[in-house]
Image (tube, rainbow, N blue to C red; front, side, top):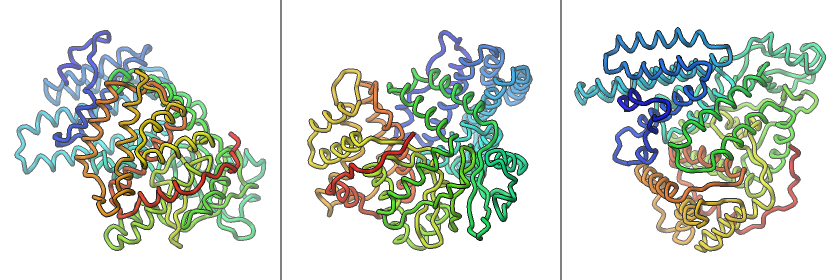
Length: 531
């Protein structure tokens, strides 16, 4: 691949490796190969975007070309790349920092691929793990410095332990709730500006040290005059312009790698990501969603949300009751060793919560990474941070409900007709690709409902990779060219939850849980949330 990069020109550059190659179960480190492809795509995005910085993009590719001349030559080219980056205008420099980090990661992996051929087998794995550690730290540090929407990429990656090398998952887990905080003076300024009062008049006590910091805001512990403990989320100042720049970078990146991805409705995907990130900047909207979903989840045993404090919530400040508890994955890691029965209960409740939101709620939490889910001291699941959410209409809920029912009774014609009504379209107009996706997701659940005594448990990683390869092949044959907006967030939610379940492999009756929802009517009277 290094030779291909060295030979290309902007007009004739070859695409990055086909994603079907990454799904080949015979690859020993498909995660590493996927990373190389993604990084290649990012470097291509830099070159496409850098109409004011063409020299920097060319220098990045020369740095890759220098691999053949050894480490010293690479270091020299890297230094020249950094020097060129410093000449960029301020806005493009943000992109250059990301590109500089990705180029170093890509180069180090390629150098390792060359050097590992000369290492004894006993040292190869240790060497690769050490390299994963170094590169994960590089990615982490840049994510923390860049902030904004770029940091959310790291949060998403950290929630997929089934796909990424473990050192990456461990390092990026920090991004779920331990991002570099903003100074307390900035926190005070945001609060006092929004309320027009001194901080001391609003709160009896306010801890200047944040409990958690994320890409959009950070949370502080405080107390009210009556002694009530609260959590105060304060938005980072100056995010509007920064997020708009990141959204432009995202569009450039997707456009530059579109030809190398399986054919899909990338315009809808990008539009939905841009919408949700922008909506996260409006805490008043988040407060409405928190209140509504909290009310809806009262019907789900063992799942709750923090109580809202409306008088101390604005567009940039969100105050809720303080919840005593621990991060979901911390609890799950303990339970998987000591109490698998309790582990099963926690993950059963987790899935129940999202089935309820999607099929009955009218609105669902669309960012269920472990940093947004706690287990309280009383053992309840507590959902946090409703900035990223998705409305789902009554018609859409009935449509997805009908697809589930038709899958259970094996009626592909009904599935195809319903997906067409929901807005799914393939290039050919035929439903085969759509049916293949439904089959991959739901066939195992249908078999568990029909033949409960023959359940085989969770699929192996090899089986998952083979299914991915088969689906990608179907996509290339007849791509999905349009899909409803709400499905993008549905795929994100159940992709994240699926990664969590594949990692912990709980013994829960998913088929029974789904059957319970399929045998009770959808509540069509749930009040919709104002946008």
